[in-house]
Length: 471
Picture 1: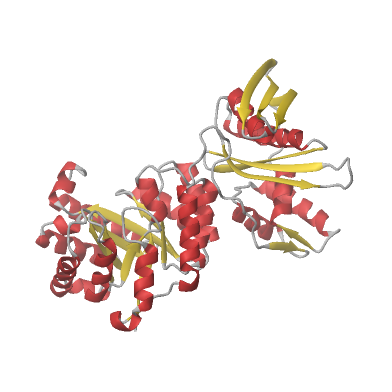
Picture 2: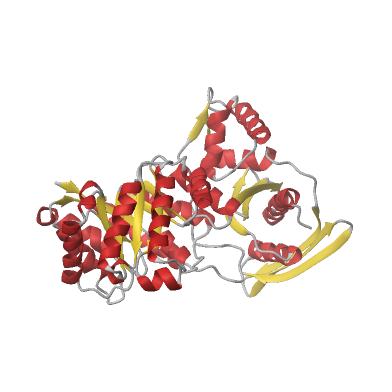
């Protein structure tokens, strides 16, 4: 029985639509959930902003353990090099080359003639194949292309090193039986397809993408593109059908169907939970606890790997400082977990001069009024003020800070815990902000938990200002 690959394009599709509902942390969590579900391929968006997107790909690559991680390149060699540099740490990396093969898209979107497009396909696929054995060629708008040209494009890609060829029905205008006939004819007339995996991607224009994917599998396709939500085939529906009728299709579906509905529902909730535009808190992802622990005997490289799993990109000096702090803590306890490592990084990594300092703060809140925060910060001898309303005292305080610096930073994580006991207990807050794709953490300690939160935010803010040179 053949194995069917089920590929998820949820994050790639969101990026293509310009939907920013998922934060940096949310994308990592979605990738981990899909990996847990045993999705064959997880597709994510490529590199547009070199630093931010490279860190995002590296972070997701370290979080995905079993699935293939696929990233699309642009049609130039520099994009291939940059994408591979970010992706090469993945356990199962795949580079994707998408090229239009219909006349309308080649000439009006890519400004290329057929012969020039064939040369580009061969050149870029070959550049990808020099980096990894797993290269996928996606024939965009294939169902509207000239059949003779489509066959030449597929042969060119396979000759250049593509191991998977995906035929894309971009318009979603074919009925299931029409798509099946189209694919069977292609397989019969293009011998090169016998040596690679044939895949299919179907738009859901006529609400028939699920049926088209199932028909494609019956026709001999062995990889299907799906998503948890959006205008394409449904991951839950297609995987459910393939799992229920494996004997009919002659394929084995790898997904963990027991967890399918729950995980898809969770991802859909994350995708559809839109950020409140008046709140610094970005999405509904709450639990960022990792499962790793550090113990006596773990070297600096192990600590660096754990920091990368949390999303940090630390230099060698900071790694050494964090490792020493971890070793000191391990003299008092057997293991150091993710939360503790987070606090250590916030305390000892990237210690910088204080560009912003807290002068004063006033917080008003109650059961019958909106929380109000009035903050004053000192910056280069000038007193800056922010007054805002929020959904709670911390929400209002962070909004006031955003107003003062006139910029919104993605709030990746927010942790509060008691570090002493009793009525005068000290509270510790760790705040993680994302700027240009890089994580910066700040730590604050006070008997006033709101003040400790403000301290932590300003601590992280000063690290951003120092490294990025902002005023």
